[in-house]
Image 1 (cartoon, rainbow, N blue to C red):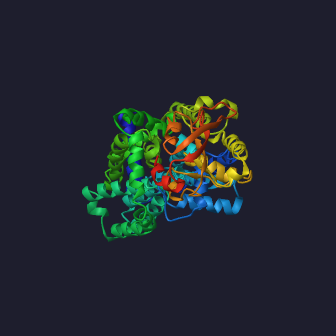
Image 2: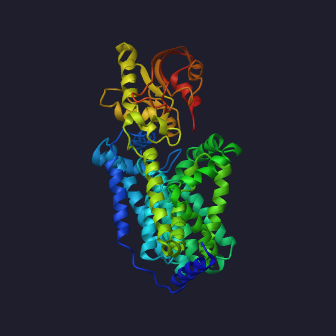
Image 3: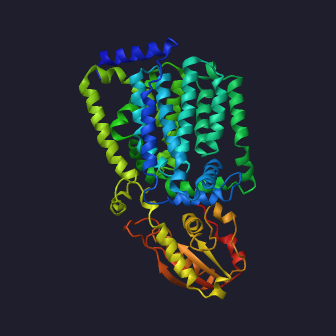
Length: 515
């Protein structure tokens, strides 16, 4: 961009910011959101349930104030889905699809708050709607799609306060933080960092008043149920966080984190969010600059703690894309070839990413995508797993089954048995992973345990682990999936374990696994 063009773009943006007037919302934004929603719902029943979804359905049947690895609202929505639709992938995925559509609209509204024209709003909506992380997360019903919406909405409110100076919006921010943190604890981390930046920087003089602290109080009140549960369960979320940091953090994953940020938007739109960072920094508005500083702090924090979890910062890119759409609006339209190049690049990169993160290919053709994104691969093989376990279970003599339990090393295996195996006559499975462990061992006096374990890449040496607790452990079956995807379950086994060293209920406390 030339110096002259940059100056013109900056003057136009500053004029929109300073006048107090903003452009009407472009109604085409709703069409973009509608396309995203329709595409997600059209693909909602492709393949099968994701491993996390099976766990969330299990959590929905054990509603409580919180869980080891997430707060209550996502399982609560899963419970609503069970009540309305039964065990239905489309019914469960309705909520994340709605969240994705809402995130697209929030992206456009944020561009409007930045002083963006209608075409800048439309560009922000398209940039948000083509984010691979948005599409991939909204295809499955875990917490990520709700987290993206929460972060985007919090940033939108901050941008609005920065433009208008109306600190009454801090109350809305507090509600959003509290609700967002009840979907995913990352929303609280974002809010904490942003609050520190505001209080320690120049934004304190214009934005830190009693309404800011009232918003903070509201957020704290909304997360009290989560804190109450954690306090009564040994603050399990902290132990869970340490486990995740140990698995995904460390110096070896910093480069993974840095490169991974280029995949938060479709590749062609990386230009937009980079320009958005510059726009926030040069805006002259302390609260807008605070968002850029919060991004930098969180970038470093997540890089060194959970680097392989590259999506942790994804929600803030909605704001950055909106800012970039406003910043580059004049430059893109000054020469048609620039806009044409961005459109072509967006179409190509969005199509390529969609093949990886969405179930658009035949199930037999997705094995190659697993290394880039495991989403599709982890939706395959569950009916086969249930069928294999059923064969082993029904193969036991009736008198042995009467005093046996099905035990899964992984929460998704337990979820598969409990959600898909119920109609096949299988009993409720138990698991030692995450919140499942707190639900207990089933029959504490069981003398036979049918144990399910993932493949050796995920659970190495599991047979040796079982032999610590049973004198007899034999492999009864091997887990496979029909499409050859080397996912977590591939190469796993079903074991029949008998002659326990100690009673099963006594062994249970030693089996707890947070991962």
